[in-house]
Image (cartoon, rainbow, N blue to C red; front, side):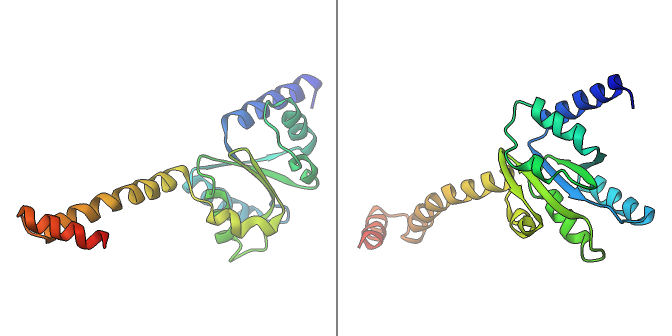
Amino acid sequence: MTREEKSQVIQDLTAQLADNANIYLADISGLNAGTTSDLRRACFKADIKLAVVKNTLLEKAMEASDREFGELPSVLKGNTSVMYSETGNAPAKVIKAFRKKSEKPLLKGAFIEEAVYIGDDQLDMLVEIKSKEELIGEIVGLLQSPAKNVISALKSGGSTIAGIIKTLSEKEG
C-alpha cells in the first residue's frame, strides 16, 4: 500500500469516526468464510456497518479525530474489526447473539456517545444500554402518568363538583 493510499484510508476512517456516535471494536479472527458471512449478514440486518481495519491506520485516524477516544487505541492489537451503528446497543446484541453459536467475535472496546468501554467483560452491560428513542419513550411515559392519574380520579368521582372535590381530598389525605 502506497503512502497516498494509506493517507486516503486514514482520511476515510477519520470521517467514519466523526460520522458515527457508536463504534465497537471486535476481534473476529479465526472465523471461517461462512461464519464471517453470517456475521456480516447479521450486522446488515441490524443496520450495522462492519469493516476490517489495519490497527495502525485506525490508531492514526483516532489521533486525527476531534473526539477523545481515551484508552480505546490501547486495544488495537491483533485482528480488529470496526462496527458502526446508529443504535448504541445494536452491535452488542449482535455479538451476544452470535456468540451462542461461536466463540467470536470478542469485544475489544466500544465508544458510545462519548463514553469509552474496554474489554469483553463489558458486553452484557452494553446490551442493556438504552437507545435515545427508548429513553425518550420512558420519559414521555413517566410524564404522562401523573396526568392520567388526575384524569382517572376526575372520572371516577362522577361529573359533579362535589364528587370531584371529594375525590381530590381523598387523594391528598
